[in-house]
Length: 354
Image 1: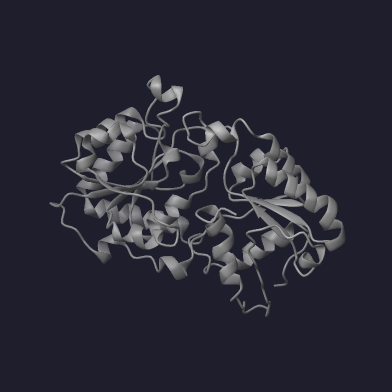
Image 2 (image 1 turned 180 degrees about the vertical axis):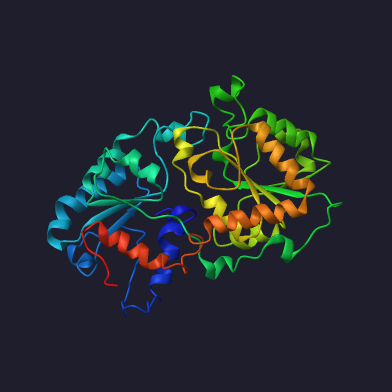
């Protein structure tokens, strides 16, 4: 299990909540356990509704799948589910993950063919994986309110004067920037998800805006690193408080147009909304419903400048963004935990009674 990313977001958080969940409709009891080692005893699995593997991708993972299916499932009679929140194919060559996943697709596809069902975070992912598994349920991402806290709009939490430099933020991994070791970088592609014009805009406005990068830092901006706030990696449990403490006024979720990015979830729109910030989004599938959606660097820059120049506009855009994601925002709200369990049960033709 990926315990620093989607495994925590999509499995650990919701099942921690489910272990304490007592819905008003019915008194159900939920129990979820996490393993760091494979158990080779069919009796161990008999008390579970299903066994789940998350983000498995290697030849060794495939061998474990095969062993479970061939030697344990027929005795334990417990189905196996594959959970995935990423597209593990069609990864852009400049991406750090491309060299592994694009060259090793076979184990992933073979595992998908072996399982009884799959869960993904988006309809685009379901469509991409449908050739390998015909039983897939879409479970959107949500945030745990018990960690993130209530939504606190920036303009109410810590208002900043227009005369002050707006704090413009981005948060993400190095996979969003071009890997300097690739030929794409050497041939001048650079940037990755950040286009050339956006990079130049950031460089030219380091004295006008306070740029804040959390996570990765692009090598293309090394010459102005001392004028950009940069924060390195923090654990997923520290991340919500860390993001809130950045005290951002405007956020960015920038993606290059491609199949890989269209299959991403809208997790950044949830994170930016819960910290109370308006954001500028790229015109990729996960963000097309948001307010400021841009098709190119020129539009991204235009939207940033508009938001920087008007606090009233920031309030307006935030409120529209919040309305778009409010029902999806938290695991604890809108019966999202109930829907979560029913999505898994739907893989086996069952559901919890209303």
